[in-house]
Image (cartoon, rainbow, N blue to C red; front, side):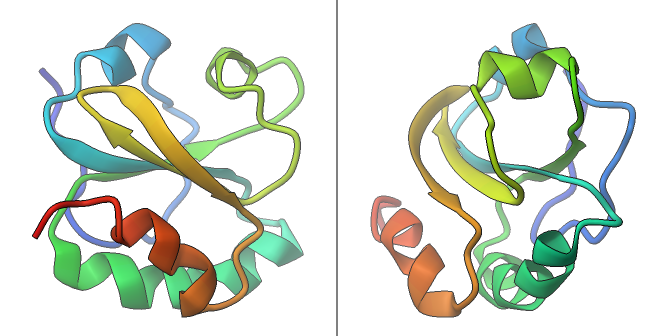
Length: 112
């Protein structure tokens, strides 16, 4: 299985995993949809980094755009969208987080 960056991943990758790859993930992790030129994504990067870095969980930043299959599979409408996964299944999501408090509900779902 492909290894994904642990903690905060600073770059959106155009080499997105497939839905099958995501479904094979084990444990908790984050899937973030957006684009490097998106102003909302740039603004969300600092709070996301602050929250995700210490967690040491996989963080996949998927470049999204019209017709890209992974974003369509997750029915992404706005960027950034941060999705909490457990064993490849979506538990919850936050759309356009602007603060740490916006992301905290996701973190609260992860057992200590």
